Image 1: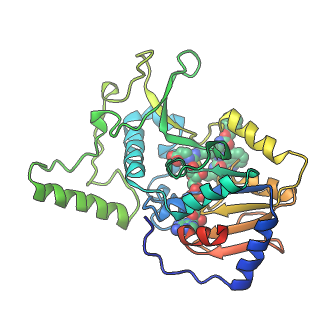
Image 2: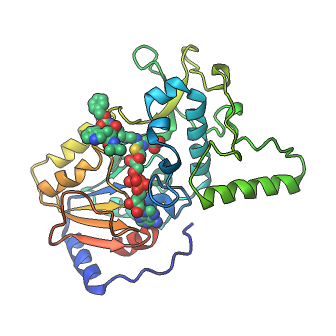
Image 3: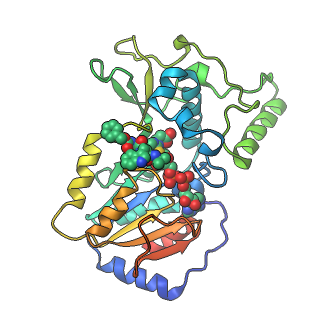
Length: 312
Ligand code: BV8
């Protein structure tokens, strides 16, 4: 559910000009980022409470990090699976799903791996998961074994249960206190699993998810790490949409710092096909690189409040 965000004042004329353009649009893209799920309680990667701030993303979201310390990387992803499953899609996720049903030419490109768009019944054919999802896991051996599965088991293996600080959890009083501490820690600052409250257990290979098919390699999260290519079928689908003959009317850039490529590059590609740009962001400084054009819109505020207003 949405945090009780203060109602966002939107300039009437600006909103009207956007609604007029949207009503005449047939080919529309959206590029979604972590800010879309912020109101669902999930931490973003940069800015206040950003995930990466306490960790260099290179430490946690690369194949090298996984090879070097699969236990640490799995604790990071197991935690994000846990909080993503606890979270609920917000009004913006539902509004985007609704627009998809009304507009066959609307394609959503999501950088988010939290699964919330899927749980808002976003039509699957109109949702491209640029960076994969936390809820697919696959064998590390992509050449021979190639096993992959959809998996919502939390924790995926017992050793990845969110460790408490060794507190005896028998009494409810203690359990309540620990969960409040963990929750407070989560809300108050970055996810820092190197913190004392969530000690990093030294997990052995045998403690981690092992591929049930080949029984030789670890399973890994089905996300795209830095330095890895986006799934070729996703790249193909997006390029096919963009390279169609007709122009693109609009790209909505929602809750993203637009710093990660090639995802962020789609904004310019849409512009090159005639699209006007509508940015929805909490921070007025987070505008896509490549300059601001006449006719673009910028709506400052919480996506979970703004997006339903813009798409109604
Ligand atoms: C690749 C999955 C090559 C894992 C992620 C140029 C071209 C190509 C590549 C590169 C390039 N330059 C650099 C690179 C390398 C790299 C890259 O882009 N690095 C960046 C840091 C410069 N790119 C790659 O490595 C990509 N791969 O290019 O491979 C290749 C090609 C062929 C063959 C082999 C290799 C792969 C990148 C994918 C990485 N994986 N995620 C995981 O999630 O753990 S990226 C991850 O970070 C997310 O998926 C997301 O994409 C990104 C976070 O960005 P945002 O979603 O924008 O979140 P952020 O916190 O930054 O911003 C939140 C925004 O919301 C803020 O603006 C904030 O103000 C706003 N906000 C907050 N609250 C709200 C709000 N707005 C509205 N309402 C609110 N309530």
